[in-house]
Image 1 (spheres, rainbow, N blue to C red):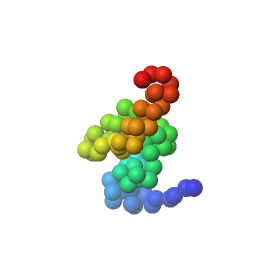
Image 2: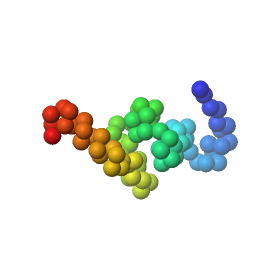
Image 3: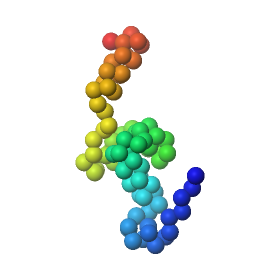
Length: 81
């Protein structure tokens, strides 16, 4: 799917196309509609670049106790823990 954003909107928002895509992606991330992995794949960001963009906006990672428990389970199944 493609979305056409009129040039006047980008100009009024004082954003480039890439900046607008990043802002949209981060908004969807804040709303827990898409994951960090989806954002990174869409925008071609590394983990550190993504985390840097979050930090610039005082946003935190979407990571809760369920994520921690799932990570522990995965690490145990791998024999790391």
